[in-house]
Image (cartoon, rainbow, N blue to C red; front, top):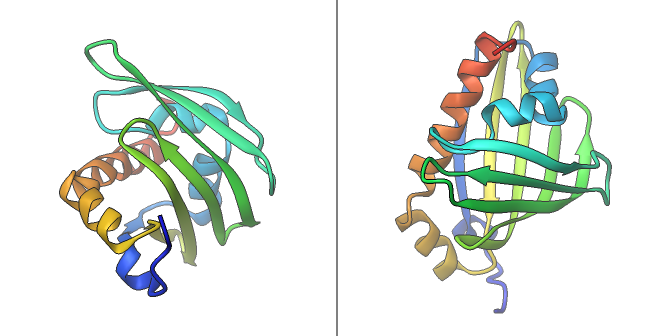
Length: 154
């Protein structure tokens, strides 16, 4: 698979504003005890298998569907700027593989503007992922994150 040069045609983006300070949103993305509470679409349970939060570090999460089937999400961190951005490779086997995910954070008082980009190898793969339900799936994930940020003790 050769990469298309125009990254905008290979990227799916979701934007949210969380009613939580950037420090809490960052913690929710970087601490395993938080990640296990919100990562994955609604109805799934997440178990953090590995979480080496540093550039070159690996992460690996097992997600269990309501029917008991499990699948693995994993990647390697390529860039981390505290309270600003997290960039990682990502494989969500068997549905999505070989993508880059970018979590971008911007402080706005006690709120946090959040941008999530998923960069695909080709424009065709990007379109396929969009049709498979990218916006509904990740939208559900970020709904769970918003709920967790409002009650992080759950």
